[in-house]
Image (cartoon, rainbow, N blue to C red; front, top):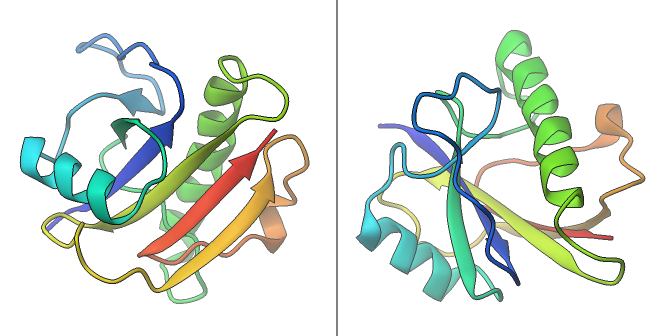
Amino acid sequence: MSLASYIGCNLEIPLSNEESDDLIIIGDYFSNEYNRRDVKKHQFTTPFIYEVSSDWGIEISDYMNPKTCAESKEKLIELCKIIDSYIDNGDYFELYSCWVGEEADKREGEIILRINNLDIEQIKIPEKTLVRFEK
């Protein structure tokens, strides 16, 4: 199984180049159209849904391998930089990570963070947690 991370936005975001080796890739990686449909229906409040990939989803918790957790923090910072360049003040985007196939499962938590005021060392984002990043 694979941990997939999805973002929900109020506007369309361009997909990454398929050959990109960037830290964050916006486009299909682990998921299929049914996974994205389920995550849109059951988790997000936004009309545009994308998978964000980089070999593994974004999860930040005390139970993770420290190396993987540090990588997730780097991915989250990069994702926020990318999305920040597209959204306006007062707008937001959402992030949700889960195992592929569990997109319709009950959410285990919700948090709201400020996109431009992240204390990455204080953030905990376990799987199945909806995170709303406000600008």
